[in-house]
Length: 103
Length: 465
Image (cartoon, rainbow over all chains, first blue to last red; front, side, top):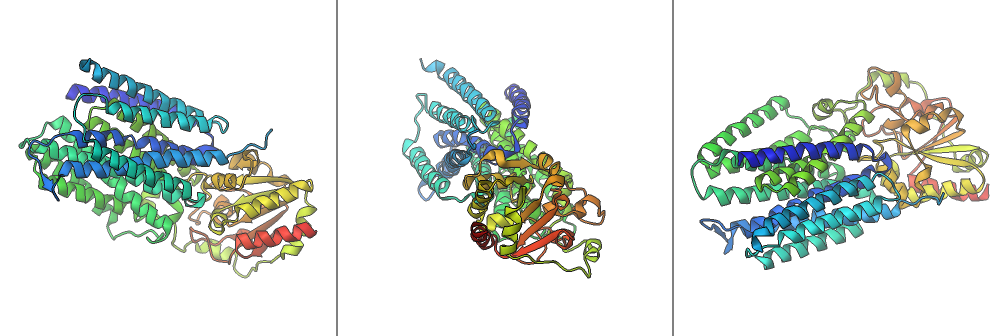
């Protein structure tokens, strides 16, 4: 487990550096779309949420006749999907407004 | 075949990460940006689909119904939302991202805590971290949303000994973490969740409305870190990479916003500027002076006879939804051979470069939008500047008045133009609550009224002039 986390840390730090490099080059005009677009990417937690619904509790806790992890997973999937779909869609709409004068 | 599934999944996550990075890279130019966004979306689609690859039983009805519900809400929001409300939307989305991470962490805790006793320390720490970051992002974002929407006061609200209280809560979280790791006790875990939520509220409440662009950027970064923390919990490299990218992006935007206000992040977080009526020095400098008004009719004549006009928009333009009228004015003037440029201050509005999006909505070509540094060189040679609904970002006190709360903040040097027109609804001070001597300057004329009405009046007069 410790090794896995360390591999994760290596990946995390390197990805941060890539992020810094790529994003410093984004001009101010595009900062708002960048923020929404990157926000949509952070909705990748969706994958985690899907995996949680799948998981089986050793001793299942039931709430309203449903397994607790499924309720939590359901909520997490809804939130993350709103984040992902809404984020990409609104960024797309916003970017379609950015027009050049044709020069 | 099935023994290859983990490799296939990792491979697709790698491809998705590549698409995210390439997509973000393409976001650096307006021409390629739409494509970049779609590439990132494609990456996300692949990453989500490959998660289903495997022979394990998925509870598809639950997963799919949640995804359909989320997609519908997301699509409808994306279609309906006004560009003016973008900061609130980012606030909510940040919160949802953080909330999802926290929920995943809680579920994961329940899954392993049933095994009872002390937790695997590494896994335990990642779960606690993910819960903590996710919860702070969730509650902090909703306070930020409330402040932007106006149902939470935009004034900095701080308890006495606020910082001591914050420190106490952080110590509490550390202490509870030790208890959870040692015993796996659910009560300690849920108290920790609650304290983290409270901490998010406490960290954002003392921040004034004028500093919201910084807070939104910072929470954006947190939402990425929350996703990365979830990645550590699930040992999912795709989540770690994506989270790190967003974390980096949010941090860069935060630092750009701080620079644009000449404040350090610590000062924004704990300084509590914004909302307090302060700056006695600047108030005295305008004492005894009065403002001069100009009518739309006179202004129209001035404008059509000018050679160069610069428009400096602020949040007031967004509130009044005047971007279409402003763009019409610019078009009219350009048709008469007047050069028109827009001066964009990085913190005008309530999120990073909010103005660009609003003006883009009104079909203003982005070549006409000038960053602060570029346009500041031109004010000396500008005939007329029209300041619309901006205040603090054009306050000359920032350049020299050491007592002013905004001292040192880079501003648009509009006062250097030959004539300055300021459109405001009233003489109320701006978001930071500071008097603005620009309004009393010898070359300044005030055009009072709601930005949308004032610009519509001006458009009619220019047509006749």
